[in-house]
Image (cartoon, rainbow, N blue to C red; front, side):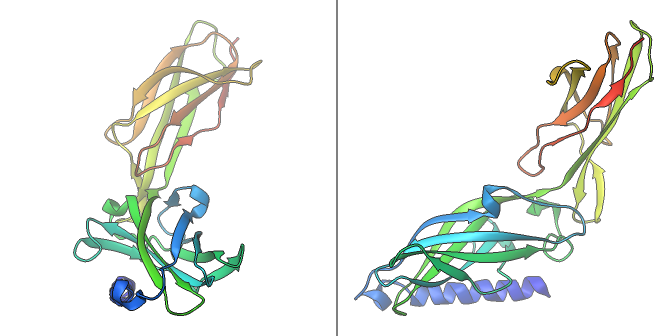
Length: 256
């Protein structure tokens, strides 16, 4: 199984880390990791079935230069005992020298929601364990470095009716907020979440928030407003730590 292979890779990395301790490198300093960037600094957002490949950049320096790098993205409370999810690169690192002592190593990680994200509880903050190897071959540094976020893809719909409508009459705006369920591989309602109803006049380019409502126990949205002028209605969800923000396109209502 993929998870078992990943756990084995993590165990191997920890064993190497132990060997690369102070006693092994008494004669030389370890490489220093200065920056790790996952997915261009953006959250990793996954739906229910389609894998996503993200790039991770590890920048480090050493007197002899940098020969290679590796990393593991892991989820849980403890790498040794409390890890319930892990992701490893799909190929060896490619390192590009910025100078004689500094390089940035590029690695790719492919996340398959069906194989890697088997529980919804895996959404949220993931740890980054990164390491680099110096060109002199005698120094390798392993560093539990920063975090990234893996999120459940969200979807949002809107419908303003009736169209057209007489001025002063009621417009009913409905919609639904859903997000990926990694356990059922389907989209389910995201319940009791604040969603903004926004309006833009036909002659304007900017939306303003009219009111904020909460999604129902099924993720449904429904509210009413009074028709005044022609314009576009939309819903906007700000997102959470486990679910990204999403905004609908505007639904035009002709007011006569």
